[in-house]
Image (cartoon, rainbow, N blue to C red):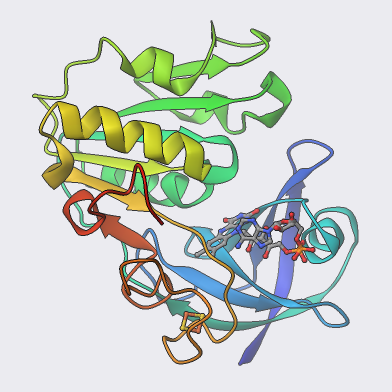
Amino acid sequence: MFVVKIAKVIRHSKNIATVFFDRKIPSYPGQFVMLYLFGYEEIPLSLSSPNSVTVKAVGETTRAIVKENFEIVGIRGAFGKPFTISDKALIIAGGIGIAPLKYLYDFLKGRGYHVELIYGARSAEELIWINEFENASFATEDGSFGFKGTVLDLLKDKSFENFNRIYCCGKEEMLREIYKLLKKKNCLNKAEFSLERFMRCGIGVCGSCVLENGLRVCKDGPVFNGMDLVDFEVEF
Ligand SMILES: Cc1cc2nc3c(=O)[nH]c(=O)nc-3n(C[C@H](O)[C@H](O)[C@H](O)COP(=O)(O)OP(=O)(O)OC[C@H]3O[C@@H](n4cnc5c(N)ncnc54)[C@H](O)[C@@H]3O)c2cc1C
Ligand code: FES
C-alpha cells in the first residue's frame, strides 16, 4: 500500500463526490484501486481518471469519503482487467457506473475516436459531468433531466451495427437487461460489462469476489466480455 495526498474534492451532489489524488496512478480505464480511508475500511473503487475516484455514499466508508475532509488515503493497485480500447464506441452508464466510463470516455476522445454515450439515473441530481460529454443521451426515471425513463428505454430502438465496442457499467439489474437485449441482437461479442462484487484482497487470492462461473471479479474482471458471461441474465 502507498499513501497519496488528496489534492482536491469536487462534491457533485449531497451523495456523490470526486476525490483527486496528488499523483496519477499507473492504470487503464476500467481498472480499480483498493482505497483505505484511515479509521474506516478498505474498499474497491474504479478510477474515474488516472488520479481520481468518484464515489457514491452508500455505507459507512463511502459516506465518510463523500462528506468528510481528509488529507491522505492508502492505495493498492490499480488492479483488474481494463476495458479494451476501440474506435466507434457506445458507452452505456447507469448511476455511479459512470465513474470508470468517464475515464474511458476521456481516453477514447483523447485518441480522436467516435464515442456515443447513453447515461441514465434516478434523477438529475445523480447525473454528473453532463456538460462534459458530446453525443450524449440522458434519461432520468423522474423526468427531471433528459428522457423520462431508463437507459433501456433509450436502447430499445437503437441500432448497434455501427459500433465496434459497447461498454456497460451500472446496477446489475440494468446490466442483465442490457445483456439480454444485446444477446438477442447477436452483439454480445462486442459488449463489455464492468461488474462489482464484495472484495477483500483485490488480487485474486481470497475468493470473496468469485462469480457463479468461477471467474474472479478482481482478477479476471472487473471488465468482462459478454461472451464470458454465459447466461448472465439468469445466473450469477
Ligand atoms: C471493482 C469495483 C469498483 C467499484 N467502483 C466504485 C466506484 O467507482 N464508485 C463507487 O461509489 N462505488 C464503487 N464500487 C462499490 C463500492 O466498493 C461500495 O459501494 C463500497 O465498498 C461500500 O462500502 P461502504 O463501507 O460505504 O458500505 P457498506 O457498509 O459496506 O455497504 C453499504 C451498502 O452497499 C452495499 N455494497 C457494499 N459493497 C458493495 C459493492 N462492492 N457493490 C455493490 N454494493 C455494495 C452493501 O450491500 C450495503 O447495502 C465498486 C465496487 C467494485 C467491486
Ligand atoms: S477479492 Fe480476493 S479473490 Fe477477488
